[in-house]
Each structure stands twice: as C-alpha cells, then as structure tokens.
Amino acid sequence: MWKSALTAELPGMGRGVIPLLYNPAPATYGPSTYELLASAGVFLADLHQELGRAVSSIDMQFYTFECDSVGQPIAQFLMALDGMRIRRRMLIDQYINLAHNDKYMRVPRRDRELSRAIASEWHATLRLIDAMRGTNVQVRMTNPLGLLYYRALHRDHRKLVLIDADIPEKAVAYLGGINPSEHNAGWNDFMVKITGDAIPPLRPFNGLLSGVMAELSMVTDNPSLVFQLERFLYDDIGASQR
Image (cartoon, rainbow, N blue to C red; front, side, top):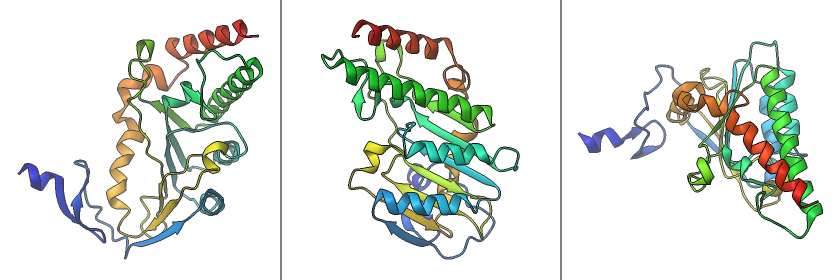
C-alpha cells in the first residue's frame, strides 16, 4: 500500500515517483511535449511571450528573486496585470534574506562599498515585493531562516512556472534550474517547457501557493516583526561597516 501510494503510471511520463497529493485532472490535456530551453536568454524570452498570453493564472516558485534587470521586468509585468482577473502568485525561498547577488549579506567585509551595494539591492528587492503585493500579486516567502538562522540549510531550490494550468488547451509549465536574477542568468543552465498531460502532476504544487504553507503567514504574508527585525539588523551591520 505504501509503495502504491508513491508510484503510479503518470500520463505521458511512464511509471515513477509522484507527489502524494497528485490527483489526475478529469480534463484531457493531450499528448505531452517537452522543449529544452538551453539558456537563460532563451527561457526568459519564451517566458515573457507566454506570460503575455495568460488569461487565467500565473503561478511561480523560485529559489531566489532579485530586483535587477532580470527579476524586475517579470515583477513589472505581473503588476501590470492588476485588475485583469488573472490570478498571480509567487513563492520565493527566504534565501533572499540570507544572500543576494550570490553573496552572503551578513558577513563582515573590508570592502564596505560591496556591502552597501548588496544591502541596497536587497532593500530594492523587498520594496519590489511590497509593490507586487500592493497590486494583488500573492507573494509568499517560504522556509523561514529561524532564530539565529538555525534553518539556513533548509532551502527549496525548486524553479517552476505554471501558466493557465487549469485550462488544458492553454496550460504551459516551465521546470528547471534558472532563477530570475542576473547572476543566475549568467550560469550555464536550462529550463524545460512542458505542455500536455505532463502538467497535471505539477498541479498539486498549487497547494503550496494557495495555503498549505499558511502556518508561515506571520513571516510571509505581511511585513512581520521578524522581517522588520532582519531589515533593522542588516541596516545596523551595513552602518557599522561604513
């Protein structure tokens, strides 16, 4: 029984391990297609094109997200959809409160200019997240770092985009290794674009986006005391290095 709960015949994907929350969608999504997007530039161009076709929903999860030339256009596009009845949701790992631009923030440095630049970009990212929330983009940050960062290694590296996932003839997904940030976009990485009946196995991921992580709401949905304290502490660290 335990084994059967973990393995099953996935539509278009063969036999393999699947999430326990998986429930096959009654609608027919059609044969699966997979397209390798072999660089960040190719992925981002394709993503922006598909975002422009969205009519119902846009769901995203990333390990890191930054207010730079890669992350900002995605955020601006999502904000521009306010009032158009397209559900927009984003999950971001709290790694962004530990490191930014691939550099740990709370590390004493002799290079004070670098410390100020990292702090400035971090604050810009937090303001961008606040702006997205202000235009009804549901943004949540998952996996809190914990007191004294004891959970710093408990990270979620998943990168997933679902567009119109509940509309079989329009559903598109992206799965792979690219985050919306400049330093990540410079890596040799890729995403896979998916359509068809391989998408329903990804839809239980909606559980995270729609509230399974509700116990994190005091850290995620509003500027919490913990979040404000982290801002204050990092401001203080930055000031001490000026």
